[in-house]
Structures are given as structure tokens and as C-alpha cells.
Image (cartoon, rainbow, N blue to C red; front, side, top):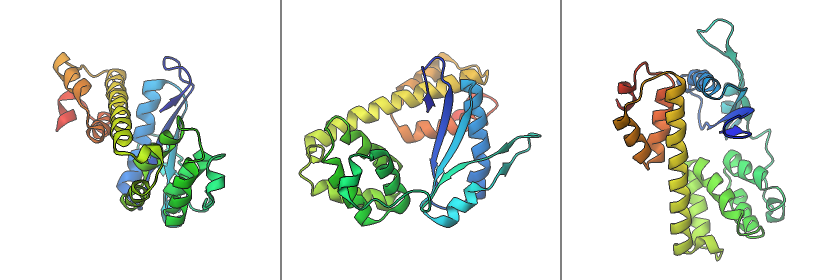
Length: 227
């Protein structure tokens, strides 16, 4: 993602939720940053959200690379950096922090306060914060959120609202991911045939598009994108 006008962003941001320490994943992060920097031509920040102290400390260490002079530094948010918000009254005035609290602490009381607090917010904003939290949460945290939403009387919990809001959100996100992938391939100077562009533009699987974006950072030819 980026901040500023789409044609002239002034800062790029890569957000990763890391559930465990992985050296392979850690060494991929500088590649992501370099690719986004090439694509946007502006400063890029790597942000890792970690649910436990050990994982947070692991990703906070500087990451050396094979490129001389390039050492990546990740900004880490772990349990020691984000308060555990268990009071619904604190969610509405600080929804961004509440989302991070759900991701980092993964406690039921935090999820309960989050869902109750969203009901105190304007309906045009609350669903978006719920989707942010749900999209980045662990499987266990997602199950908790789904359970709480199923028993909630909040508008978004109705089958109609959940189906149609979720569909629009998914379609919009897939379109944005596809556009970002094509921009990255073009920025790396890779020739993209029209048939490949059609496949990318027509893909609605956001998970697959994210995999292709990560692969696009390291491939040497477009043919390798779908391997």
C-alpha cells in the first residue's frame, strides 16, 4: 500500500502479520521492500505485526542482504508495543489501535470488546475496521470473530449484509491486487503478453494474486509467474 496520490505516492508500506519465527520469510522481506521501492520510487517501510514477544524480537533484528550496503530494518509491533483493549468504550475513539490489539493479543476478551465497540461507531466505518481485523487475523482469531459476529445483532452480522458487503470488498481488493501486480511487472521491465494481462485482470482469488505479487519480485521472466 502507499500514501499520497496514486500517481505520485510519497511513502510505501508493506504490512506482514507473522505468527512464528521463519528465517526464510525474514530474508524475503528486503526483496518485497526493494520491489515496492522500484515500483513507487519513494521510501518504503516494512511493518511486521507479531502476536508473541519471541517472534517480535526475531523480526526486529536487522536483515543483511547479498546487495552490498543494503541492510533492511523492520518496524515491529508486538505485545509490548500495543495495549490489550478489553473495554468496548475504548474501541470507538481508537479503532486503528483496537484492530492491532485484536491481531497482537488474540485474546477472547479483546475480540469481544472489539466487536461490541464497533457497534458504537458509525455504520459507514465500522464494517471496514472489522474487515481489516478479519483479513489479517490468525485462523483462531478469525473463528472467534466469526462466532461473535454470528451472535451479534449488529447490522453487518445479518446474512444479506455480510454477503453483499463481503462480496464488494473482495471484488474491490482483487481488482487492486491485480493492478498492483501488473504495475510491478511493468516496473521490473518484464514483457507481459496481453493473454497474461487478461488472466491477471480476471483473477478474483486475492490469495493467489498475493502469491503472484510476491513471486513477481524475484522471477526473471513472466512465464515463471504461474509455475
